Length: 474
Image (cartoon, rainbow, N blue to C red; front, side, top):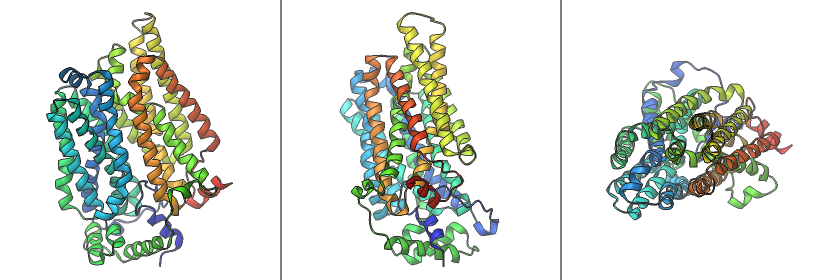
């Protein structure tokens, strides 16, 4: 029988939008993992949803000027289009857990891919802002679900010693999707770009017919024969699955004995510091301005006198490289230190962009201003990719006690998407108010994030979950 500690390490991934980074660094032989071909295929199909996520997030910037010209949209109406994706995503995030528990992980991914396909097609045929916004809302709902179910599915099918590595492919493929959207958007119309957004969802939809359902979900709903068959298909016909099978069943049984936690329970004296750290990190992650800059990077480059196509391709490619690099540093530099370095880089990036627009507004240093804006965006995006992007999600998987993780996950995901909506919707209004002031405002948020992290956020590297939670309680 598995120990209580073993079961807790396993069961955190059953129905929550956060992935616990694997603490066990013991290297197992290939025979322990069995045949990994199906695991890799299943992961590839799942991260097509992550690619779809990135395609959707990256679409609005390269498509902006074409849509505004063809449909005669004002900046205000385009702000609605750019930000309504987050409204759909918030609803998707709220419902994703229940859909995944009712219809299964594959069922959720199938539904999400179909909704995304319909949404992209609505954008493609749109002749008015009403249908355009409706399509954008649908794609938002789809990726809101995918943002939950893809990492959960990957965690539930992956052997222990590969879980951390394969879990990082979710964030990596999001950045790849953004980069591809910028690259293709530089050469095709906004309608054609919308059609390319259908591709990852279509690949996922077809691929789901060839991969297994999550064995953990099958065990959770009592489908014992299918549970054993799908676990064996993931581990290989000759693999010994008896120990893993027993551990999964034990973890399911212990989960059923834990009382359900309501949303109000998160704010009692016992849990409020966990919630403060978790929600605080997500608030700062968004209100530093990342989605405003990503959604409207084209306008920033144009206003600064830099080609939006060249700038978009370069910075989205940089994002892919540095996201992969940041994953290698997570367990070496530590979460807290990496986050602080990342926020400091974003502070510098915001200051450089703001200074460039001050120079432009006062007709000074015409040769220097565009360079400052370009360098500022690169420093900003690169810094975000290394730490502020991935670190809050990793810390979330570590600080919450096991009995509140599911409820806390829904709250934190909702806060994240709500912050994304506020920033993406307000960016143009702030930019109109002051082309340089908006970036100094984001820089001020960076300073607050640094102070918050130093004062409240624990370093979680190399600690057990019990040690992390004890350090927060003290």
